[in-house]
Image 1 (cartoon, one colour):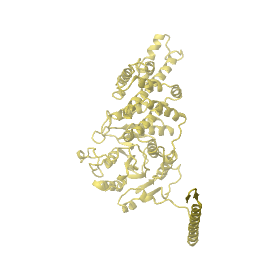
Image 2: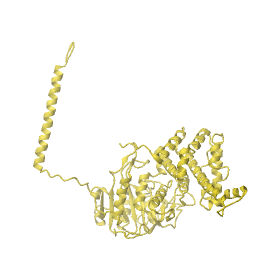
Image 3: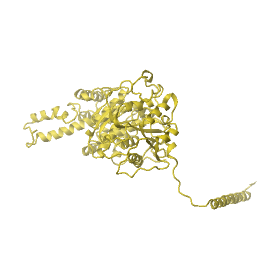
Image 4: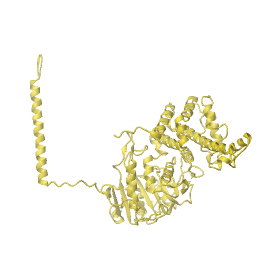
Length: 537
């Protein structure tokens, strides 16, 4: 089994902060402690961003060459405490007395929990976009002053402060790392709000959301959007190149996503409130250029019995006992005419014929909506060890859309199958992860198939990928399991004549028999010669 690598650099800072915070958890359940820790990280972030802006203003008001120059201390303070000077720059206003330094000075006080709650409440009141988002239950009895003071001291460490001085984004990385660790600690429940990094990165690298509207109808803690933002930056774009829309039905997870995205500086529309995408769609008129989601697997109670005549079910009414094909059709309903969507689904959806699912899949294939299926290895998720697949669908396989200005190959009447089940390595006893090299291999295969000219031309690779015509898929009754189509990996050629091979193997096996016989005879002679005083062997 692959061993977990020893963290270094920034990863070492994040891991050491996690270890320090986890030691303070005591007997508190990880699901509760998560909001305690992440709320404090967010509070430190908004305070630190506020402090950075305040330092900038402090220099400006003392510089006679700037329009901000103020000759007296009183006038300077009026600028430094002017709310508009912060909010106009996209900085959250943090009221005096509720900043991180104020909490740090009071970290050893018995009322520190109440002070944190008051700070959270004050920040929410001063910043409407955070209304109802921040946790405000730090004064409860199970959160001792020692725990809260210890956490404040942990997130005030000099090494974190130094890293922030270089780049405030380090707190975003710390937040993201903490989310992943809490998901691991929570086990099955953790998967409800977190999709593993390697899965998210693969989906984003395949979709390449350079610009346009990005939508996730089951957004969890917002990891898909964070990775899309990283992708944009890595390819020379800017955050405003994409507009972010999401929805989450769990209120605590919705709040977590709001904090995560605000901390990253991502202006996201997650709806006016949390809500079920099927029964309380927060974006009814949205037509997205990219949809990327990891909805809950195989959920049975999704309200399907009350939505039998819903206009979203253009390709067949999904069964009331399984939401998989409801998710697909909900996303297609919100997809623009030239957009592309990617969603994670349990492998049963590739071949199920029960409750009309086979007919829906057939209709999707015959409408030429299915573009690519990637079979993933098992043990990628904290929620389950079962293998899953990623589905890519588009309404126009010839469209350039907003994905790229490069010409794309006409792939009408074809589906790309990628079998990645043998990839990945175990990073813990129960969890597997794809490497960056493996992610690049899969993503490059898909994007080469779509016709990107700066990649090697696409070619089928036995055992890994195959581009299959719809007529061939019909012969398999519209089952979309990649293993049916990619074949077996090529084996190196063997030029040894058959009669020579049989003769060689025959001699080798007989030689093995003779060796075993000789060894047995040697052991028997040794036993016969063995004498213990007073006894015959």
